[in-house]
Image 1 (cartoon, one colour):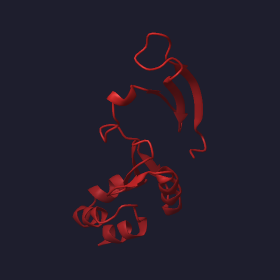
Image 2: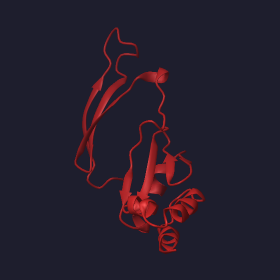
Image 3: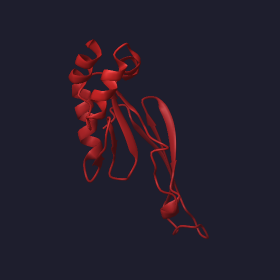
Image 4: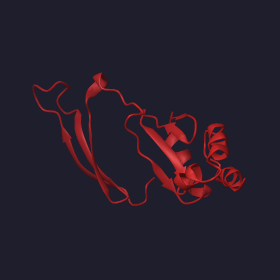
Length: 131
């Protein structure tokens, strides 16, 4: 879904590990030029909103593209532009200028409008920012 995303090396648990031999241990990948490595800690360690991956979108079409793909296959819509994918990973999907919108002179109005949304509606946020 990320056009510049690249998979990397996959490592597997071996004999005597806390998960069955051959189970994925780590997965390396690159998104938007940033390298990541995900660790499979098994069922003991659950995903929480404490770690999330923000998707910075240029327009409503990009918001819709990422929103639809990230919730495919069992993801959950949340509030204020947040969702969880089918694995339980949290993703805030936001317009590129969200920081400007929520810190501008009409920040209270923008925040109030944002609180009513699940998927961000850029046109509504821009109207709120203009007063």
